[in-house]
Figure 1 (tube, rainbow, N blue to C red):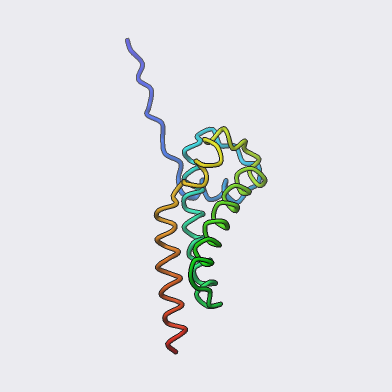
Figure 2: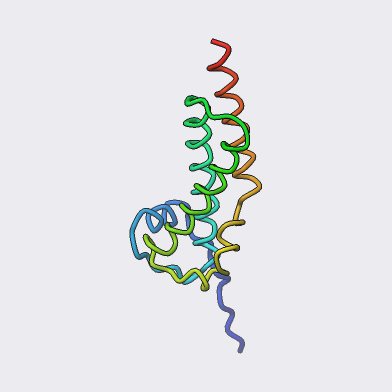
Length: 121
């Protein structure tokens, strides 16, 4: 008689959020931590886009500043707040590029929209 094991279940978003907001959480599934980093970058991109749009920051300085802020915040969140060794999740570059394309698009759309709206009114 063979015993069937149930497939691993995906963590709920409330469980992941609770772990994300608690320091030194256990992350047995590193993909869950990378998902939290991905969505954290989305929220950060929205906030930075709003701030840079209202300040008004323009040009290459705005883009470089966003890239630095996004990379540093993700790095510090994983290594300082969650106390996870960055090599366990693929290293610095893996954390930096995790969700970068989508987060950068969110940042650009927010930044341009807010800047355009505030400069025309």
